[in-house]
Image (cartoon, rainbow, N blue to C red; front, side):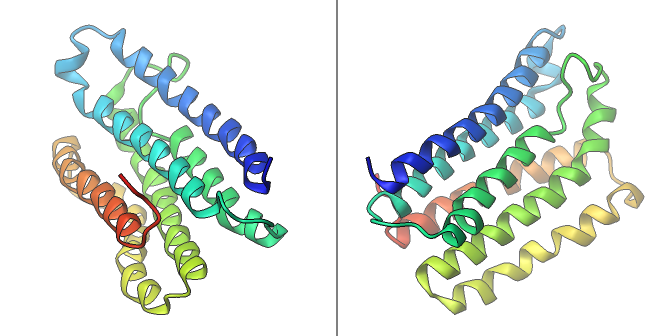
Length: 194
């Protein structure tokens, strides 16, 4: 077994816990009356995050599968930190579980700032990690600025005069664009093949 194959078991366990958490939330949401009509956005958000988990797992595989050795710094600051941040995003997704109650809209609006902070950290880590791996300094300086804007937005989120409908429209536009951008960037760098 290669170095990465041993490490990928650890990544798979962490991501498996995150996927389990999201699937518990999906099951609880599907048990609600008229769930598809009322909570379609929460289910869509869960589906996009699950797709992102699969994308990240195979992107890590594409980057590290053929390495002969992996230093502790590369292991802990690279894929391990990204997988842990992704797990935290999955654990703090603003969809309640059975233990957290069934007021979906309030739970969603209260949980969005946490997801924005963690998502911003996840994207900034992705840019730093990609810059380290590829050595492309221009990539980091161009792409990190828009992710830094998530932090003030998350901080002032409660004070903004927006409701859940505005958030749904915003995320329906930004999530597919964000995932598409990540897939395109990975594909253009040769890190992902179809």
